[in-house]
Image (tube, rainbow over all chains, first blue to last red; front, side):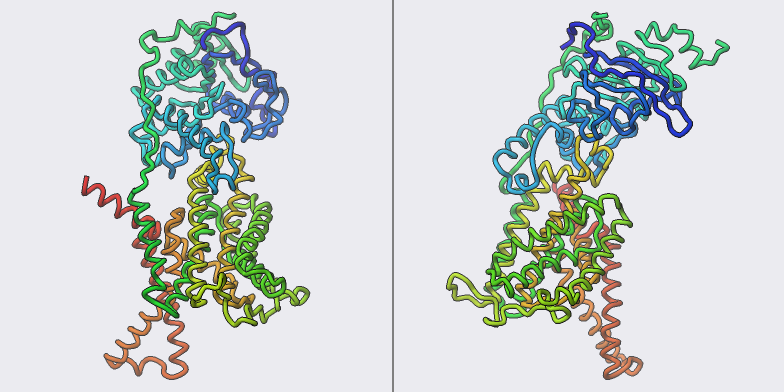
Length: 261
Length: 375
């Protein structure tokens, strides 16, 4: 999965502009996410990271520009069709289904990758049972993979924050996505948990072959885990490159530390 | 460009740690829940054997209420949508049954599924304007539905079908529910078993639905609609389906009610009946379908229990010589009824105080306490 023949963009962000009234949240931002890479997206508060993230998950529609997933525009699709394309996401503050068990949360993640209808479900027809077995197999595999087997039957609402984040990751992976969008996954985690998260993000790419877009404030996590980093400031892309290149970029240094440095 | 720096960043020590897939969910045939279900079923089946007459009628009524509570719970408990208007779907089911039997000459047993389908249609259609409403606003819209329904049923233009204010008396030629298949059975007992059969079928299908992909999508919307949408769940589709299925189940209860009472009239289906279903659901446990029998019992007996308490109060008042302070004769009768309403309210408040998540929450808390003590 790691060998990429040529820079195939999984996502191509083409001149995206988003305006809220008179405010330009994103101004002609453009970059690609290549297959099999971990791309870090950083920028100071208000740089437009979350706005871009919400465009990718179709919660916002850009004023101008286009977003192509594997060559096809996604802007004509409603938000609930995005998961079916192969784009999974997590939320900044965990958004699990709190009253449901860990297992059911992950099963719901497989919703877009499975079929059923209410009548067949109520009658438990053989074909929906086969679908259910498929969902259960995917779920059991992911629960083991993210070490959630022991808490599988517990309601998510009562679990520690770090565990809930793992549940969210398992849920996002259950639809077998090609691209995973992570919205500040390190937010609210302690030092050890961030280390663990870094390992998990690598494993997601290396063992599952999933391309990752990481929107993050936690600088050391982004710099150590990302293959490439895109930096936004005031809605514009100010730098793009390897972590080393970006860290040396004078515009980036100025954006984070101020012009005096 | 091609050499994306995977290898630079990959920790060589981290290659694919061995992991074991989690165990498949356990589905034991003789679990505690299944044993309780079978016991309850056996208890219900045996009711006409050790009792008869009025008690069997009351238990039939209880099962009908339980189906209605189950219907509302699918909408509110499972999908998180409020309804103060389920009396309307109950009425639609009851009238569909009565009109088909009396004017269409359709076999009354056949009208039960038809009533469900008709109620499904109404519920599904009502869901579309309701999709834009949430919480209190949805409650208000359904409240309007509940208030409008009895008035619509009284409309002069449709009186030839609905019977207007008078309603429809059923089974006028046979005086009672016809017992089919040449069975030598008391009509009351037959109606009980028919209702129990329908209840069992509806219960099994509803439980299967809740545990399926569709049910999980509905619960996901209840818990977090934005995350649900990101999982690929269509909110309009599943919310409208939940409304339709909920109305279907409630409509079936309405049709059974018409058969059991042998009479339908607009004022049996007022807003207060919708509240009664809501009370039954809250007492049974919101989101806990198993609680529907407890909800049905509560709908049936809470007013009676309130009256018994009322009697006790009157008796004590007489015993300690306070009877003179209470109004007598006709006025006493009126006071009696009012006081039972107060006691009804007090019982409700106490119940919600002791078991905020209904009988379901209480039972689950006890079970987990017992499990912790024994393990």
